[in-house]
Image (cartoon, rainbow, N blue to C red):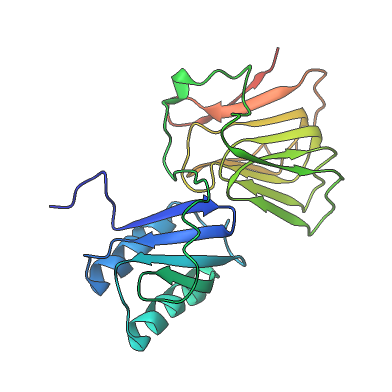
Length: 228
């Protein structure tokens, strides 16, 4: 039986980008099934990005590598940039800090008055995002110094902080961290996602709050509260 602490596939964010880490002892059938199950909880939030394959001591032949690349590209819109492992020439990037794809703390244990952990990478976007723009921070948190307009999207493996109006789509905890939060000075999203959870505002209702708000997971649902 598989050890739950060592899943067959893991998604982690590194300084050099997103990496899919594969158990070197698993069969190809187990790897493909594990990819399907792992991606099922992420929706299309990672579509269009490049990623690395981390194989460790495993060696794939050309046919197996083509199968994995095709599965990731055709089904999920992911492009494999390089293969990292003992049997390949690419650098391993072993010193890059990593953010696990599962929460380290239960939601109730998070201190939401200090929601930018100092041990994670934080990407700063210093402008307003307009319709059609997508910004991602899969190695940690994202802070937007401006608005996220309708039709724009922000995605992070950790928290998302918008120091302006959030009117577009925000996906925090994109690699599965349900302890992540979304904060905005004016929270009017078209869609909020935290981990696998999704919520939308009631149809036809547009309103402005005079206080910042924070969205988080509580009892398997996204709740929005005033942030004091």
